[in-house]
Image 1: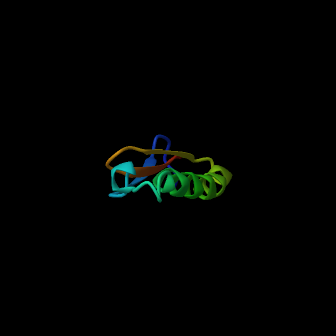
Image 2 (image 1 turned 90 degrees about the horizontal axis):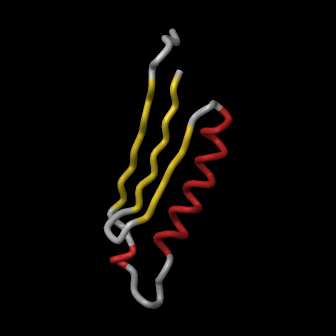
Amino acid sequence: MNFPGETATVTVWVDAGSRNETSETNGVAHLLETAAFKGAAQSIAKIGGQVSSYTSREHMVLRWCHSG
């Protein structure tokens, strides 16, 4: 059944922010976040969902949300 107002949200926090990078790996956390975001955004958008993501010094965060 699909009831109006139902929402499903999945948030993934990865302990891999820019703080863990060295001068040789600078930007890798953001690169991985962008790659994951683009792949997920295409799939989730097909079913009407939304995707957001960000990278901080401490974490990389991906969030998928779908309202029915």
